Length: 152
Image 1 (cartoon, rainbow, N blue to C red):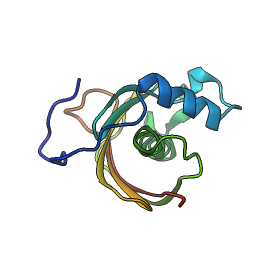
Image 2: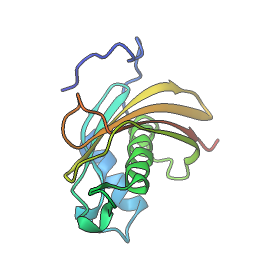
Image 3: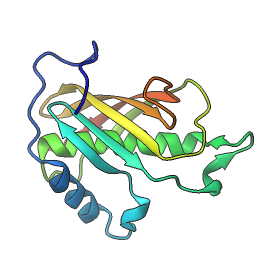
Image 4: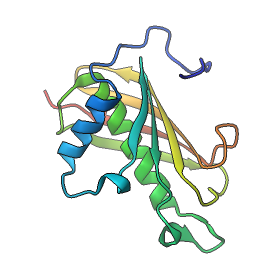
């Protein structure tokens, strides 16, 4: 499953939903989307998820032949949303309140991987770290900190 990076919280909360449960919830939240166009959970664990977005095609490329920033920001947000839903269950109205993106290198064309780690999960707010790559997890293309507001 996942390694144990140094930034992982010591006492990660157990998820309420497994991979299939959170993917079903994402399909419910976005019924207009085709499953092959969504970034779906491939792994779910305590305080972590891995989502993979199939290569969206050449329309996602910016000049220079790398995946555009808006596409990377979208998967960062999706990974954080998936992580939050996996841990709080069916709270579809959880919303992004902050997304800070750091672009580290060009993301070469390919499937986009995003590993999200829960930094804090409270009753009203969740803070997630998201690491994004296309080539290898050792060659990060971007990193994001995403905060979600959780409805009461």
